[in-house]
Length: 273
Image (cartoon, rainbow, N blue to C red; front, side):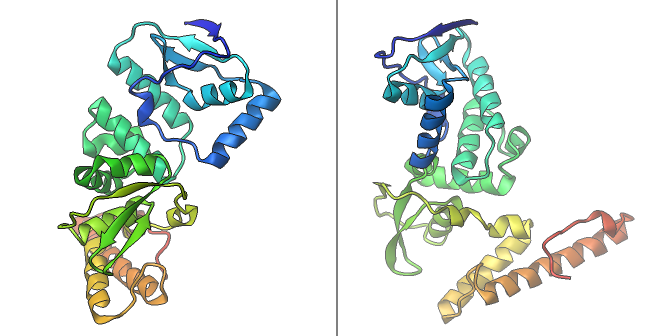
């Protein structure tokens, strides 16, 4: 690959696979821009036949700073080779945000990776997230565009009989799942960013068992109809999830003992002793 620099006035367009990667938050982009201003552009962007395959934010930062962009040109490569490069660079910047999980799902899908194999490519997504993102995408691909951009979508919830903004995978999935007949048009482009706090907790990651997860949401729905708050962050919700998880941990240990496995090999760090 040949190392070159662009004219600082030249505007480069993105390769189709570059658009599968998440967009920086305003704060993240400013941090990048300030770093390039202080230290220069250390990592060159990657072009594929003149189109940005990796590094669109670095190119934008250099343009705004009025400096030339350093780049490497791959020349003619196949889509499969281009996706391998995108995957490699994405893994190196692995984060646990919902934007990063959405990025991983879209890249794997473009690569043709089977849903049950995606977690082997990106550790940031498990099968639960893959199933949720797939469900969300079927409802409207623009939901994933919003997640990729740290934006929110406005959805009407029949459960609460009101419209609200949702900016997380779990939030969007739950509203759609509990309101499958929703036909209202989604309004994207709220400039407000999704709350980072919403990434702190996942019912699915905590319970880590499809039967336990279903049991919790069944209780949650029953509680909602009865006016009882079983939200995951409420005291009752936390207690309920702990009890359900303990139930399935106990069942797993009995099953393991019957099969001749050691129950000590089953580790659940978050269960209350």
